[in-house]
Length: 212
Length: 204
Image 1: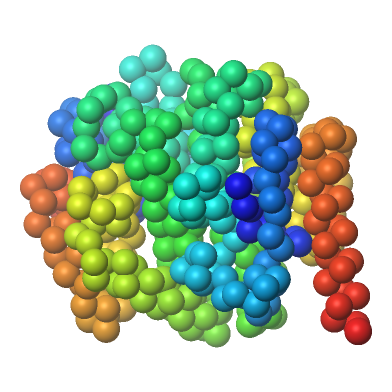
Image 2: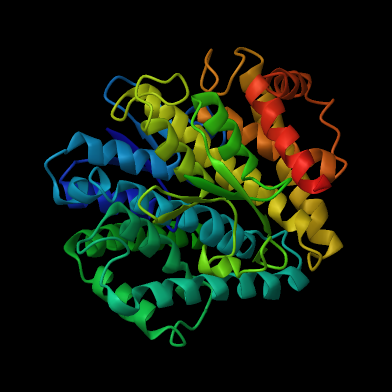
């Protein structure tokens, strides 16, 4: 399956999940500033919303929205560790966290920081929203290693892929030590290391191309 | 089960879905600004995030996040027309729409509700919404509902968010397919009953 990915996008979560499940994906890196694929095709041709991630399924259909894609991937591996929580009794808890991360933290929190058009006086407000959400995560992680249950789930992949943006925006996470420890523990997973490395390599290539 | 909700909030979507599924819910109205229930008790005890909707399940646990509550309710009525079974492509399409509505539309409106949002960012938020409305209008040119021919949980959510355009004086007439869609959903008995419940709660 082809996976339309971005060098610092939330699509990282999908790549982590695919690697956890051992599902090989053919990565297609999208230039999100120009919204074009490497062969020059307009991104809107494969996702009319002009966003990543998008997954091209074996039958040629495209599926967008990270949350839907992650559930699709887990459903392909019903006997996996990831599926045991995401499809078991705690499945609505997994979805509950993913909804919070996708709406409150990603869109309501970080999104304005990425937009060049965001006026400077809105940035402190966005940072305040982000801090409130990181605080909530920190409280939840007081007595647990993962967001739901006792093992890594798609909610953790999603959470990591968004909270990692604190580095990009120089947000100090030391006020939330349990979140900081959680991030370090997730970062040590082989799937996460490989997915993060793939993004870093691509980002370096893009920087080199811009400089040339 | 008991639903904690607030008039004009996204919790309307859950009430619409429950009525479509004929699942009886006790309604508990929340003053979401003061974070109080009508008896004066603290809403943070129900939902530490202070948001609506929250569903109190029969075992006493609380479930939050509207797009998740509607999935929980629909999955409790197998064979319903609002949410296809897990593992089917039709299900992922509805999930795709639910996520789009929750992130792009719902969170797109959020800055307009906050008194602290600077004017310059309000304009940007309105432009972002206009882009989403254009996309919805194009989709709805060829089908009556978001995921095709059947009304789904995503439509209940989308309608609920689109109603906020009235609160912010956003005219939907530049997007005629979208305006027709809103009218189509508004005509459903479930929607009329849920909106009537909100009117009565505000009056009471």
